[in-house]
Length: 218
Image 1 (cartoon, rainbow, N blue to C red):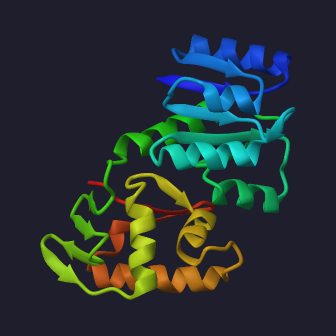
Image 2 (cartoon, rainbow, N blue to C red):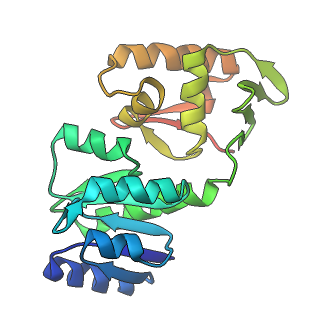
């Protein structure tokens, strides 16, 4: 796997390049926004948002426009909720606040790369174990049986199915479905409860305590 590290602090960059290389990744370092946008294709970008020649959020937006499948993790000292929300909205798959451990970063890299590996060039048809979803037609079937869902229930299911088998944070689901992070927690729980009932097997959508939900992929 090839990683592009966008980091203007050369001391931090040197330590990360060494650590990632020891873990088997092919790492290219870019110290500026310009270098990041002119770098060779890669599988994943670790993107500092504070760059000397431009806003990292604009770099993130530009990289996402180029590829829907590229993994992007914002790695930054900006830790406020509004910063995290904005980072996710412009295209980051995940958001890591400095300081962090290599163990945490490694786990987040693996999670994003797993999602990218499951991403198909066309996202119209999704398969998650017993569940089949036609996104364009907005139809769902469980074991071949058609299931009728409301718009919000369908959108929640698609959000989970795009990361089938992985724990999807509640905030990520809310952002995907409502376009904000301010929806009441109870609202999400009610929609998920209704979705479980209509799928016919509550075990298909698992609660991940303290995180969000997981769609069983087998």
